[in-house]
Amino acid sequence: MDTFEYRNEQLCCEEVALTRIAEEFGTPTYVYSRDALERAYLAYAEALEGRDALVCYAVKANSNIAVLNVLARLGAGFDIVSAGELERVLRAGGDASKVVFSGVGKQPYEIIQALNAGIRCFNIESEAELDRVNDVAASEGKVAAISFRVNPDVDAGTHPYISTGLKDNKFGIDINEAVRIYKRAAEMAHVDIVGMDCHIGSQLTEVAPFLDALDRVLVLVDKLANEGIVIKHLDLGGGLGVCYTDEEPPTPQEYIAAVLEKLGDRELGLIFEPGRSIAANAGVMLTRVEFLKCTDEKNFAIIDGAMNDLIRPALYSAYQEIVPVVLREGGEAKSWDLVGPVCETGDFLGKDRELNLEPGDLLAVCSAGAYGFVMASNYNSRGRPAEVMVDDSQQYLIRKRETLTDLVRGEQLLPKDR
Ligand code: LLP
Image (cartoon, rainbow, N blue to C red; front, side):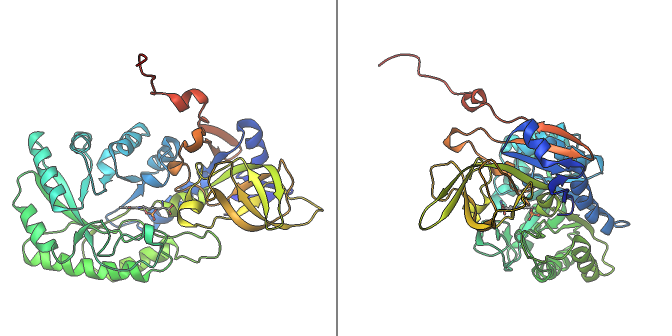
């Protein structure tokens, strides 16, 4: 994470010391680097230059409208999975004609909203959903551009909860049923077949599973061509991994080069839906040590950030680096479990971490820009953290910390006694 660097013993994001952000906005707080987001997006866009291609950032990874706006300004498209995400993209100045709509359970009102916004394509995940999109488009007097998400039955070799391209996952249509379903769609009046997509999982650290999936999808593209059904674009989904600790995932350049080589001179438009590889290492979560509690068995550092703020360690046993914001001279490092104030044993952000700690210390949980704030909850009635974006030597609050009033918004007492 070269955007996050120590200068004079202080961890900085671009030109801003993280201590300054903690003083101004409190903790826990998510901090994102505009520069890191831009560079990560441009790595994809530049590798695809000169091709008919679109990089549709997966909004679910980090949906703050300031983040979306930074990417929209660079010309990014967006991969959405709900009307809520569409709303965010539009408010952020995103271009609806560069939006693809994924997800297994699109509601009629969401389909209407997307049709009216003029999105580029619906990524359809089942036959029942095909019928729904066709019916809703008919009732709106529109024709929906569609792609089918094909489940290629390949093992992405990642955590089972984020692996999506196996036969027993809920995602996509069975590749063996695909020709029949495409032919059915071709007969429908209110859908227009434009593409094919697949997304086999997240945090992939090898190119091979992507290429296996691509091989299978290309066989299907050719079969459809024989039936007179022309696929204009291939959407290869997201999934490229990042380095959390010592993983060495391919770079976007390497991944795209491998895809382009396999495609040879085929004239297919390309869409990618990266989320994590754009946002994860563009962010950290700042948290402060409240108390140190040493028992015979363990040393616990009780911090003010918890599983409700960042659930990946608790949910996936995910490892995220945790580093001091100010380097300390003297004292000695010990092994600590970094635990939050939530009443669950699973409430930890890191275990057995060698750190030199004192109460009041600031820590940065690294690689927290993707699937961090977006998965935060109000469990234990804790307000969700603030979000800050750094742009060079300026820091901007892009989401206020939730207040006690925010926590009960929309709730009501019953009107009378029994
Ligand atoms: N496209 C589709 C259809 C997806 O389902 C996903 C992620 C993406 C694109 C973006 O994938 P990425 O490039 O970020 O790997 N919460 C989990 C990750 C869940 C990913 C869900 N789908 C985590 O924290 O690891």
